[in-house]
Length: 245
Length: 139
Image (tube, rainbow over all chains, first blue to last red):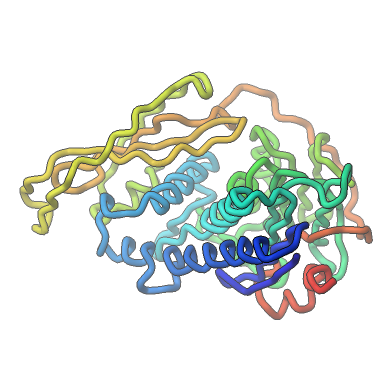
C-alpha cells in the first residue's frame, strides 16, 4: 500500500508492503503525526511551540519534551560541525527544521513498527527511512538524484533498516547557509549520507553541505555513516563501505 | 552576537544566559542516569526578580544508536532561567583519534536502474510532480 501526501511543506510517500484496514489505519497515524509536528514545530506558524519560544512567550521549563529533544539534537550537531550547522542564524528566527524533519520521520517509522509493520519505505522530500526488504533477499534500492539532471540518478544504494538523506541545492537555489559565515554554502553539489537513523543521516548531510569542501574530510571521520559526495568539480567521493546496488 | 560556541538551547534562552558545558565522556552505554522528575514549579511572573521556585533539572530523552548515546540535562534556576546545560552522555563520534578514512574518487555518471525510491530534495509540489519519485509513487 502506497500513499503520498503533502505535509510539512513536502511530498511524503509511505510505501508499506502489506495491505488491509490495519495498514491503512497505521498510515493515517503516520500522516497525523507529521501534521502534528508541523503544527507544533513550524517556524512559519505563529502559534507553533517553536515560534512561541522564539518570541519569549514560553520559558525553557515550559517546553515539551519533544522540543527539548529537538533543541538538544540541534545543539549536538552545531557543536559537532563547529557551527556550520545551526538552528539559529544571526538575525533570523529560530529554525530547528534541519533536525525536525529527520526526527519526525524517524519517529513515524517507529509508529509503523509499533503496529507490527516491518517492511516499508518512507520518503519525505527525498529523505528516506527503510525497514525490511521489499522482496526476500533484496534490500530497498534507493536512487541518488543526479545533481544536475532532473530525470537521472547518479548512484543506487541499498538500504534495509536504515536511512538515506541527501542535501543539495537542486531547483531551490542557494538555500543552505554556512552557519559560521551566514553565507550560502558553496563547493559541493550534493551530499548523501546513509546511517542507522534519519536524524543522523539528515543532520550530517546538511552539516557537510554547509561546510563545503572541508566537509568531505569531516564527514568521512564521523562514525556510523557512509557517504557519497559530488563536489563542484563533478568528482564523486564515496565511502568504500557504501552499499551500492 | 559574539561568536562563541554556546549551547543552542542556552543561546535560545530568552535571557541570553551563557551556560557552561561540562563534558562527561564515558564508556558507551555504561552509564545509567537517574531521570529527575521536575519539581513542581511556582514560576514568578516578575522579570527576573525573586521567585519562590526552586532550582530543578529537566533531562532530555536518551537518543541512542549502536554508535553512541546523547542526553542533555538542563538546570533551571529558581528564577526560571537555564543556568546550565550538561551533557549527561554523548557519543564519541567525531571526537576520536581515528585516522580519516580515505574516500574513493570516481567520476559523476548518470545511471538508470530499477529503484524503489529516490533520495534528493523534492522540496516543492511542482518539482515533485515532475520528479522520478512521483513516477515511482504512481506505479
